[in-house]
Length: 225
Image (cartoon, rainbow, N blue to C red; front, side):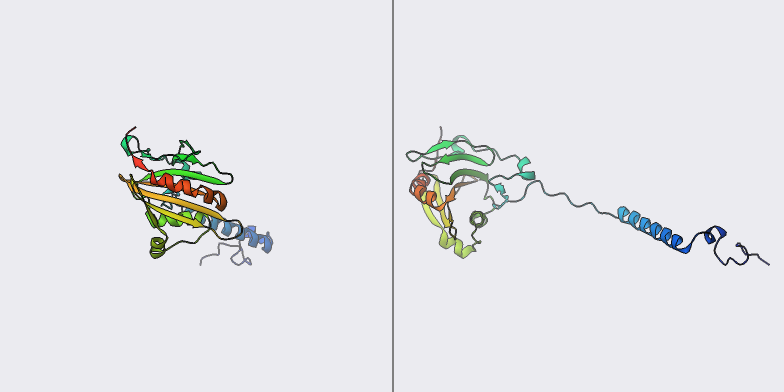
């Protein structure tokens, strides 16, 4: 006849356990269970995917890289495409009183108009269609707080200017509200590149500089130095 592995009268509980109160055993069991769950969680943890180095911008990032005008963060580590030179570089004639400075990053040039107030005029070039006209126009509208357009509204908002460099699609948008912003921009596709000549700022300064800006767009051309 087999004898029990436990002393008589103890049931299935070893003598060492009988000397420890039941609440202590319950707490120890809970801790052991929790530790086991944590080990299981670590064992099966998934590593999240790394973000893309640069988002497609609106030009989309392009995307037009943040594009398209450059951004801080991860996208800042992405080098700008080489600027066209020689016959591939866009030229223009500055209106009287305007000034020009070359700019790094995504900007080909920065232009200065002789007006007071908040105003920024930039020239940006990107290879290929740079995300398409609709995406770029809607990105511009978003910069001044306007909703996006569809293809039909895009066509009705477009005005075409002629220049020696080719046809320039002109857009002019003004935000709503008491403090209004305005954006006037020309888009030119030529020689496999997309050129963006944009003026943005407070509605007053942009309106004052607009006639000269339109004349500048009409002088766009490609020529050797």
